[in-house]
Length: 464
Ligand code: NDP
Image 1: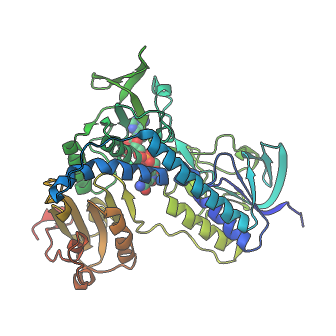
Image 2 (image 1 turned 180 degrees about the vertical axis):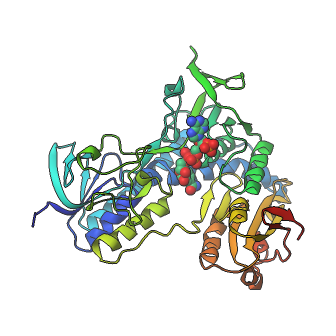
Image 3 (image 1 turned 45 degrees about the horizontal axis):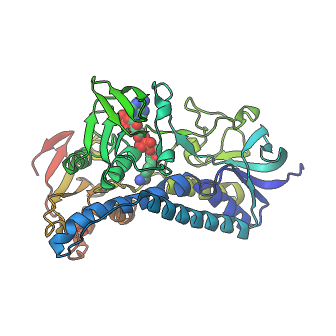
């Protein structure tokens, strides 16, 4: 039998890679992990975590606006961007140290280096020029922002990576894209007082989400003062002598702003990984092709997370890593379960969603009951804030199972986590109805919508 330096070598120290390495180490395997940047990956270093901290920061402007309704005089307020950046960086340092400690405790060899394949069992560590061998290799290199190199002037733009390190907060920005990142950052910048435009090529933001959710959020963002431009793209972007950017839009308008941020999707990180030396197959976008268990076409090479471009979410990468471990090392093959993944968009107001949209459910079921409530959450009443909350449940009329749940409003992300359990358990609407409400909360609406708002029969909307 060949002898290798490691039982498992992991390339990439993000959510999926760290989890796999740590648990394999805990099993007594000899594990090495190489990371070229910082431990924690996109989620911890330049994604979910710092983004959420920015979201909290950006919500203060509305808290200050609402305070007088509750009797508070706030006085003059000021926002200091460098303070937010420094505090955010300190928190990221703390989390990175926890990740490293978790690996260390489980005796994982941490190698701060870019790694690439030289053969199917051999990995080159570029920092030292040393080559190591491993019996099993896990690729967990994640993804990176699409730089949209076909766009003239793309080099003047930032992506989410840059947004976390801007030296100064711009006075004005155009955020391009209509997905999670564009929507979240447009709201962050707006909340921090930046004159914000969202530019999206489609008809309405958040393609793929329930139509009511999309309408509700887009209308609310516009009402807040975010300039949402749909059905247009950039023609080109030029830097002026004064450093500002001039963006020509496809509709013919030119906009001059301090920054342009591209949030046009993410691409798998496989460039320069040496996969050509292994025979591992990739798709046209460069994503590693894996089977239902995250195994590539080369038996001992596996891949999890965004590099496989299945579902680009941190908890999914972690789940895939745990399934990989069971399958590869515990003789307990488990396929990742992608049914009813609850997710949140940290827009303002935020979105929490799980299960099918009305359009998807219409395709799958002959008759639906749709329960919908739009109301002003209690918190908004005294401040006179007009912003409404949306709740929507989609029920298969035949089985009475709740197949989709969608919330837009304060706390929607937290609600989605719990709705995720109910939908995963295939709870029926009768069980929702039999659940005692928690009063007074916004979430109680989810168990007190007794009458359907309408039905959908064979694709046609019908009276309740
Ligand atoms: P998304 O896939 O969500 O959105 C990409 C957006 O860019 C879409 O609106 C897409 O338009 C648009 N787009 C793509 N290519 C072009 C182009 N050539 N010209 C103009 N527009 C274009 O990607 P994000 O970058 O926002 O986020 C990446 C992933 O990260 C998400 O899929 C999500 O899973 C994850 N994420 C999750 C978060 C969370 O859980 N809260 C937060 C942030 C990210 P169209 O819709 O028309 O295709």
